[in-house]
Image (cartoon, rainbow, N blue to C red; front, side):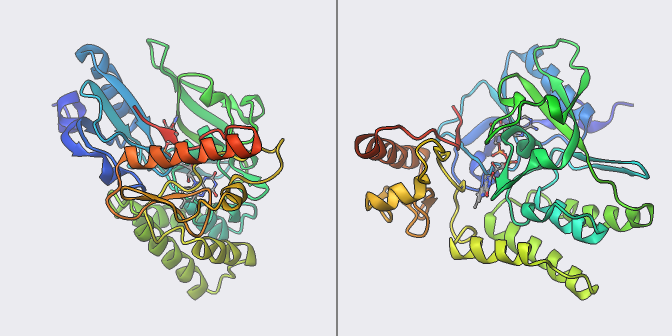
Length: 339
Ligand SMILES: Cc1cc2nc3c(=O)[nH]c(=O)nc-3n(C[C@H](O)[C@H](O)[C@H](O)COP(=O)(O)OP(=O)(O)OC[C@H]3O[C@@H](n4cnc5c(N)ncnc54)[C@H](O)[C@@H]3O)c2cc1C
């Protein structure tokens, strides 16, 4: 008998508010929305789009995108936030795209694997982290993965392929995945936990999977800090790198208001971060509709009072024009503005 979740129709939610699936809490009702949990469900959805003549848009936890106020009627919005799966073996650790990056910091402490601390409280799933080359200070996702598994969406067979991290053309917030229609399924990590830790790792993941659909920044923060506290209770040391991250992000009010984090990429040729330039232009605190340029971080636009996507885009243009007029370049958006 066919599994109930294995038909295109049973996997699609109708009239689903995209605002519920974005850390911005912005986005109108999608005609079609789905959260596949397995590769088979994902492939059913992709093939179904072809049969039904629908476009699709792939996202993760929605922490680096701005959904439209009026989503496209003929588009299936596919969120991978429930595509959460680990395969831990003695010589291999595969992590699927929907796994929150911050879980790497927690499991790194649990397994005694150094180098994952920078992902602590970094919103988003591993798939998008691989796609965006998510980073914190000098550390980035490309430092810790070994082999990436993906589906080339232009290949009619939708066969699973793999690529070594050295071939992924990684740079500052850049990767080969942004240059091709490739959907990241997950990755093998460079470091592998001890066999004795496998059960504890699977328990950690099962706890997260129990938190269905959690997507506000406040709930993300309280979940991850509770997991860090639990490690302390087990006698494990939380390194200063992780506590410094919590202090920094709390200081910038990252989890207090809905946002997508930094709106623009920094221009390293210019040499001054976008946030500092916005500060020099006295734009912090500027409001439009329900959106506001964060008073705490010039490169963040927060949704402080039922903002629309248009409100955020208006303030993005204010920043682009202000920086262009005063400093002679247009900052490149980091946030993905979804059509
Ligand atoms: C408060 C806050 C602080 C932040 N701080 C940082 C920071 O310090 N450093 C940093 O790098 N980022 C930061 N971000 C941005 C965000 O955390 C990262 O960009 C993260 O990688 C986004 O993950 P996501 O799963 O939410 O992706 P989404 O926002 O859902 O998607 C982002 C993009 O990735 C694509 N995508 C998603 N999944 C896949 C996949 N499996 N295969 C192919 N493409 C995919 C989408 O199409 C979209 O273009 C911050 C965001 C917030 C809200």
